[in-house]
Structures are given as structure tokens and as C-alpha cells.
Amino acid sequence: MNAQLINVLSDEEVSAIEAEISHLPDRKSAAIDAMKIVQEKRGWISDESLSAIARLLGMSFEELDGIATFYNLLYRKPVGKKVILFCDSVSCWLMDSEKVCKKLQDTLGIQFGETTTDDQYTLLPVTCLGDCDHAPAMMVGDELHHDLTVDNVEAIFK
Amino acid sequence: MTQTPLTKNITGKGIIDGESPTNLAGFEATGGYQAVRDLVGKMDPADLLQLIKDSNLRGRGGAGFPTGMKWSFVPAPDGRGHRYLIANADEMEPGTFKDRLIMENDPHQLVEGMVLSAYTISADIGYIFIRAEYHRAIAELRAAIEDAEQRGYLGDRIQGSDFSFHLHVHVSAGRYICGEETALLNSLEGKRATPRAKPPFPQVSGLWGRPTIVNNVETLCNISHIAREGADWFQDLGKGSDAGTKLFGASGRVKNPGCWELPMGTSIREILMDHAGGMQDGYQLKGFLPGGASTDFLTPDHLDLPMEYEAIQKAGSRMGTGTMIILDDRACPVGMIANLEKFFARESCGFCTPCREGLPWVRDLLDTIEAGGGKPEDLEILERQATFIGAMGNTHCAHAPGAIEPLSSGLKYFREDFEQHIHDGCCPYASKN
Image 1 (cartoon, rainbow over the protein chains, first blue to last red):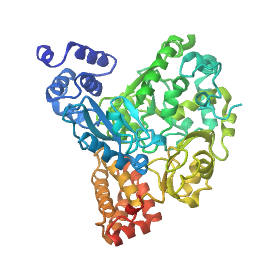
Image 2: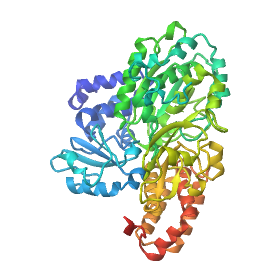
Image 3: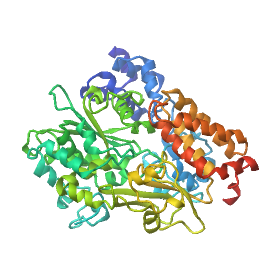
Image 4: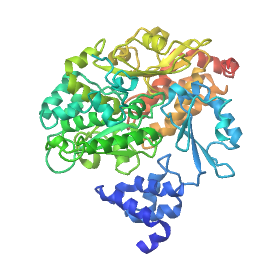
């Protein structure tokens, strides 16, 4: 089993996943954590990675893919260097987030679900970021940007 | 005595010698962990449980279930395995931004609350289930846990007692439904976050089949204050029938959107006018959701109601998370409800048919009406959908009934707006912005 895995998952990834498993009652319980570990380095979870993780955890590809595709922050397609999570929930909507989003999409030349041609950014909608007193808000990678307007959103990407 | 126990360290009133409460010394200087030092291993957990019951603390995550009663359903330790305490820090209810405030600025308050709660229910392992977008809160909590472990407030034999409690931060991989407590448990187990059938309730058979309590962050933060100051003190913090303080908030076109700790029973008018500063110039109040996306609309007629579980329920809504979303007169109510239902349709876990199929149907109808293509009979279909999937028991969990709350109340209060869209064949608000 391990000979095949070594080609796909790095030693660091395998040992990080094993460390997670070590304090769980069974191997499958590490499914989400294992995928996050792999995504951390690679940016997304390819079929190859998913297959390797499934084998490491003793579950089928389909069962693990069913979990992967449930969660919006596990990516089954390649994403840009930074993922933009743009809040499309109600408090931001009330503060004209749709206009800001349109400006953002025009600036980057991408719609929701798309990646810029230079692979820098992927734009995704996200549920309320809990920053409603500074709406509209978005995450760019790990950074929170808020009080967005049609006039200030472009500068964030310069 | 301070009347804002939850935010005293955040607003500055509780800070001593300029020490930040985010570091352990600063937190201890304001009385932090004193209850852990005084009570763990010394007070009978049963007495602590009685104290929480007597305090009348109710869950701050939205449902308002009495915390002491919830805890009392946990069976006595059987010595056969772990018992879990989980902080629900998933905060994904649209328009809700209260738990983030505490976790980023006063993380030890949550840790201390969890130690005392775990001691009360004899839990030995704890998780803080937190959404991945809360990077700063995650970093603060991890640092706080490490510091607390070093000082013997967490880990084996806390403060030299027989009680051990290990606390971990679990960063989620997304999805709103994880905030539902049994969906959260499935997610912690590495599965799809589909809610579980109840019974069995998590108190008896929760995480990996073991006794488990899931509480909201704000709920848990109240525990150390009640333990230190007593049940009567806590009851007296509230203005009316509900005990304690609450983090209330307002977002939308108000002058000063924000989140404030106020007595339970503070009137909606006071929150909106005195704290949120009233509406922005050029905007009028048309309606509001009192406690997040899944609560029924209320109108300016309800401004004098106290923010209390019973009073808001009597008015046909729910206090929910206590963070209000304000609809102004220049925003389209149909557009706002369409936005809400798009969210609920996307976040359905897909397990049961009424929710999986019904919510997209509702969303599509609302989009059509908003775009000017609606027919009069569409309103009847919306109402029928609201009746079918809004009724508890017709769906597997409370997601769809929650989704229907702003729709059915919106159809009641903003009927004319719906009809005008259909009559005019366009959104009458489009020209206002």
C-alpha cells in the first residue's frame, strides 16, 4: 500500500495525517482533516490525491469524494494562489455588495467559480463572514477586507 | 459592580494596568480563572449545575433552550469512555457577528467558561468548532489554550484536582448546516454534515456515541461569571423576564452598525436609536429581522418590544442570535428575501426532499418575481410552499422551517411590494438606487 502512496502523498503529509488519526477513535474520522492537510500544500485535492487519502484512511474513493464535495472550503478543482471569498449574504446585500461584486468581477475579469488567467485569484461566494457592522466584506486569502465600496475595491488588487 | 460581564475586558472597563485580556496575565488581573482556582475540585459539580439552572441562563445561539436543563440530561459518568463538551463557534447565521467579538478579543473567557462547564458535566475532552474564515480568532484561541495549559487551567489534574480536561480547536471546512448541533457532530467525526435524527439526543449519544454537550460561544462565556457572582446576580442583570445580558447588534443602513452587550429585555427602539444611532440620513426603517436570517420580519410597529425570548415570540418572530438586520425603505423587500432564500437553498444539506427541492423552487420563484416575470398565482405557490416546508416535522431538521420564517412574514408585511412587482412587471425599487 505505502509504495503506491509515496508517489502521491509526501512523507510529511502522511505523517501529519497519521498524527491526526492517532487521537481519533478510527481512521475514517480523520477524513476532513486529512483533506485539509493535503489541500494546505497543494491548493486543491486532485483525483489522485483523493484516491491516495481514501486508501490511507481505508475508505472508498466515492465515500471520501462524497465528503469532499459537501464542504465549500475543500476544493476539488485547481484554485488560484489566493481564494477570494466574497460575502453574498443579506447584510452585505443591503449595503450594495452586488455593485461592489460587479466591480470586482470586472476588475479581475472573472465570475464566481473562475480563476484569473495568471492563476493569482479564484473568486467564490461565501456565507456571511460575521463582519456585518463593516459590510460589505470579503476574504482575500487569509485577509479580511471590509467597508468595501465600488471605489475602494479595485485598489486591493494593485 | 460592572453590568457588562461578557465585554468588560473588551470595552476597556475591566482592563487593569493596560494589560490586554488576550494575554493570560491581563485576563487573570481582571479576575479571570479565579472561578477555576476556587471551584474546580472543591465545589460539587451537582451544586454548580444547580447554580446554572437557578440562573435561568438560556442558550445564546438562537434557540434559547435553558442551559442548565440541557446539561441535566447528560447521564452520570459510567467510566466507559470520553465525555465531550463542544463550543459551537461556527457563527454562520447571516447578519450575526457577536461570537467573533469575544473570541478575537477575550479568548480566555471562552476557555474558562468551557473548563467550568466541562467540570459541571464531567467532560474530559472539549472542542471549539470554529469556521475557517475566523483566522484571528483561531490564532487567539490556540494561544490562549496553550497558555492555560501551562498554568494548569487545562490538561491533566487541573489546579491539583482529580479533574482533567483537554481542549482542542477544530477548524471547519465550511457549510452553514454545521451550526446545527448534530450536523456539527457528524462533521467533527469527519463525515458529511447531515443532521442526525433525534432521539437519541447528543447529551446521551453524541460525538462517537458518547455523552456530548454542544453550546454556543456566548452561552459558555456566561458560565464563569455565574459561577463567581451567583444566580441572583445574573438574574438581576436582565431587565424583564430573561436573565443576564446579551450581545445585541444591528447591521444595514443604520448610522452606527455594531454589537453591544446590553441587559436582556432592552427595547428594540433603544438598541436601534441609542446604540445603532438610528437610520442613516435619507433612509427610513421598513422592517427588520430581529436575530439573524432565519427569524421572521418585524416592523416599526414592534420597536417598543423588549428583546426577550417570549416577547419576540409573541410578536410572531424569534430573538434568534439577537443581531438585527435592518431593511430600509430604499432596499427591495422581495430582493432581500430572494437573497435570503438563495442562501438557504445553497446551504441545504440535501438529505430530505422538501428542503432540497422546495427551497430552490422558492428561490427561483422569488428571482422571477424580482426580475419582473412573476404571475399572481406565484404568490399562492409561495404561500403553499411556506406552509409545507415551514412546518416543523415535515423536514428532517430546522433548516427549511428557519428559511421559511423571513418568507412567510415577508409575504404578510410586504404583500403590496410583491403585488406591485407582479403588476408592474419590474422591481419598483430599481429606480431608487
